[in-house]
Amino acid sequence: DAGVIQSPRHEVTEMGQEVTLRCKPISGHDYLFWYRQTMMRGLELLIYFNNNVPIDDSGMPEDRFSAKMPNASFSTLKIQPSEPRDSAVYFCASSATGDNQPQHFGDGTRLSIL
Amino acid sequence: QQQVKQSPQSLIVQKGGISIINCAYENTAFDYFPWYQQFPGKGPALLIAIRPDVSEKKEGRFTISFNKSAKQFSLHIMDSQPGDSATYFCAASKDFGNEKLTFGTGTRLTIIP
Image 1: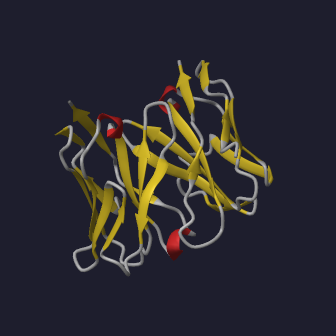
Image 2: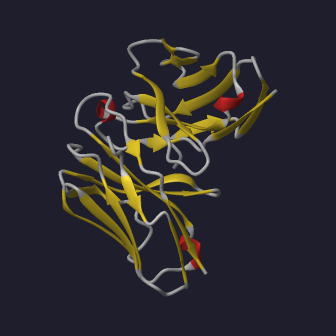
């Protein structure tokens, strides 16, 4: 079992640049979640998908953030233009449908915006 | 609005002692309460979870105690070991986990020899 795969693991870029984070969920999982983790705000849910359809994007901070899931095995989170306050660790997680199904997290992308 | 409050923010326990982390929730519609463990540089991983129809669940050295009337639940780690040093998050969800998780703010646990 490969687990949830995120890329890149680390990203350093300058303010104003476009940033794209990628996620491959566990095969067969119906749900995909994007989280952001910072010291100040903890673990925040940004958006989640069910069967590739966005269900709740109320956590997306502003229009600079967008997420897509073109198929069951791939999702992207894009920030354009990036700002220093976007610096954080971004996690992707997936889970299967059914009672008490755990969310499986990837190892995250550490994003630094200079 | 923070729907799941977690305390303490950090905790230091001697090896062999009992570590206790507490959480309180507000939304009575929550029906699934997992605990996640996170090591540095890794994503959170499910440790143990409970549903409100039971008051306690034990898995090895880890126990969740659940008080439905008080809307509180806690994680107890018995015989704490240095390898348990990590950040612990409580969470809550509706529909038995088929909806989004609301996480607590995390507790950084350090086990000292």
